[in-house]
Image (tube, rainbow, N blue to C red; front, side, top):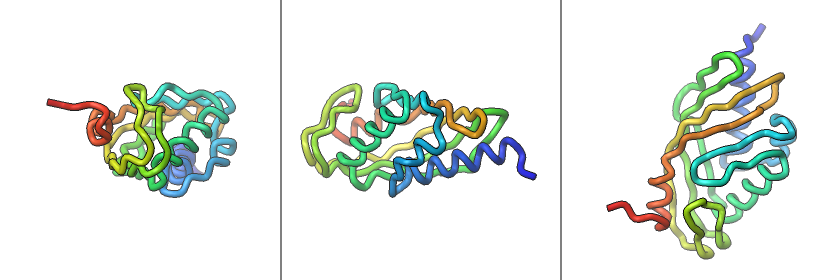
Length: 150
């Protein structure tokens, strides 16, 4: 019999692969997330709920068609929480993108971002309640030309 921690890691593993991975399956949001799930990272405004999260990812992937994130270490589970370290990014070859809090990109800049982060997900009753991540947004924004670091 699997432990709660292993069950929660399996849920998060599917989420990372099917939502954040190379090919995004937006129906995974309905399957694995509570209806008012919170998705929060420093680069973007917080998203809440299935439709808001799906719209965010659809726009992100339209602007960055090769967007992909993957785990870089084993998941750690404790109680309702699962922590994962990741790396990822993509190349902006799509339409203009205005979802970054610090600024917008015109269409098809050809700029590539690659950065890392750590994410904490809270699971209740087999569903993701929140995903809160700390990412290296400065690196991504610098690579995209939205900020200059001296």
